Length: 371
Image 1 (cartoon, rainbow, N blue to C red):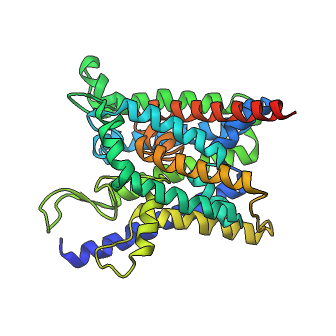
Image 2: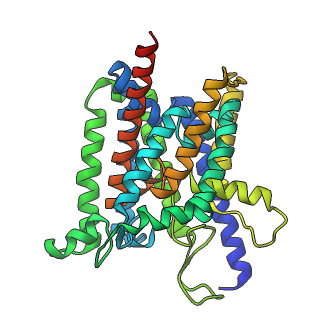
């Protein structure tokens, strides 16, 4: 493959990822898709409707990903999430930090981008602070602390940490066949639970769950199939074009926000290139803004007072640090990662939900104490 072909392929990958992320932003704005909001609805008023929408999206993404594994198109081990090293402590600590932070900041990374598209200036501040904190945890001062502490505690497995890789030897069947079986069983169970009650079958829930799940699976295809190069002419090795991790990726909104800030600040540096993560972050804002403007729901919104500002700043820092430690957010680990049936992803999303519940309980305690 000639270099000009790689450039053309990269352009195709970026436009495809951008288009899917625009769709993500529009759907999220239309349906109020939000993991933090789903957890808050349960804790505060006992409403499970948005949680069913989120779980439906996970189930759809899981079915889509593992169907592509069964077809031989994708391999979970070639993603960021399913390598042999289980960084369980990073997932626990980072996930809990991210979950607590997203409550303080009024939403996770994806919700921050959606809210920016709707005119929320608070979320614009969160975007910048989250990106700086994430970049510091990728390559700066908190990265040194991360590597020396939580990342040092890990379990190395002989194969990948995705459930098909772990269980295939004992089951005595091919990993691709087991991936399809587990994807259908686990993903199907999630779909059944999501749709079991009438609240899960509302139009917005179906649009949000099915739409977001299809988009996540679609980006897996864009990165892992369309963007896959069996032999890069420059390195003579397998490559996935237009990714920051050099592996196949789907949607995630912590490290990509950091890379987006880096690309903007060093735009004239020829070594800086657009990636799937960067264009996805932009696409979500564009899709959200387009829907908000079209439906006349676009509204400027700022901070109420100093306490509101402080909460969002602290929340952004916690999300930036925690999201990098946990290798993702409610979308990165909660959908893209969990769709691969990765152990670290399952640990991370449990910790994120636990951190969010703790933050919501803490907020309730503060209100009750002040009253």
